[in-house]
Length: 357
Image (cartoon, rainbow, N blue to C red):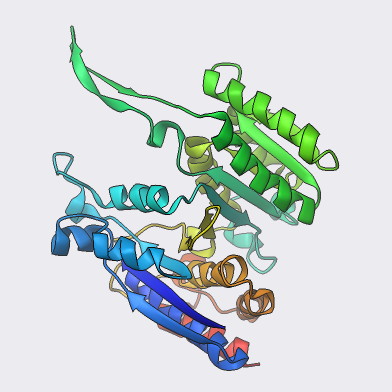
């Protein structure tokens, strides 16, 4: 395998965790005889500082020419001015739209070695294995929005818009994943209130009956799902939902694992490069201290190998190495529960050592 990868370290702890993910990818390349070529590009707040935009044209062009993209995190207090012309997060929305990344995959599978790290009781979360598939380029985040005069001052509006094709393509991704897993798909909506959700429900039911009759399919309202996710998470296999609902539910689901520092994600389209990233954000309060947990970024690299480079054995080897490191008792500060902890680089080194074994 000879592959060109674009690295977008971003802001905050992004460069620190991407460095460790790159080290692990290099260890994989050496072990399995691959050649990975890296190109580092600005995105987010750092790109605003250097180029005046969170997603420079050169960065987008490099991403389009790559086999896959690994992102750290974007944003921070420096760029939080509500009156600013642009914000780092605008770069995320833009790259998803420009690369056609309509399906976001977020696996939530608590490690048996870290059940005590979750605020939920271990008997509730033990055995949980959920794959969230979130629609990523439609809904409120991309619909018409703005402000207009109102008798009281101003009125703000955001519009949730979906069409049949947008629903079909992401539900199809989720159903295909369910067929390869435990054969169950749950669609989350708010069809008792929202017209967009009623379209989701109708299109999904028709698609599942026509193309995936062997997959057990059900529907749950988003407010009920928020409760079920912390009361009976083992009951779910693959969950598909629209953009904003998926954003909220997956962050809630991160607490099943005990830390956002453990969860990767993959954003995929019909063709072209996928975008891989940890879900934890830029964590500016700990940036530069060398204590950030790199495991989510490392596991994002594993997803990159699986979904973009189709290197399943290599992906599994990273996941096994991470599991072995955790089973051996090594922890970063966020999951150490006040006990001994490793720094960012030290944890990356432990994973590389586990790969060598």
